[in-house]
Image (cartoon, rainbow, N blue to C red):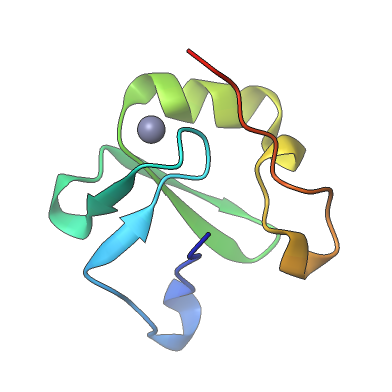
Amino acid sequence: MRVVRTWNGVLTMQVTDPVCRRSIPLETVEAHREFLGWSYFFCSAQCVRRFDQRPENYIDRQQGGPPAHIEQP
Ligand SMILES: [Zn+2]
């Protein structure tokens, strides 16, 4: 999973939605959230809602969190 860290200026044109795992172009991102200092980008309001409910399910394992949990729609 690619996590874009906006605070240090690292941006890619293509980001991965941590909820549905789709790769989406930055310009089509529906919303983003800050969590534990990282920025997460989402393709739809539905994915944002899922993240808001259980953000710890979706954070990257590099941050010491649990492995990403993939929910099926
Ligand atoms: Zn999504």
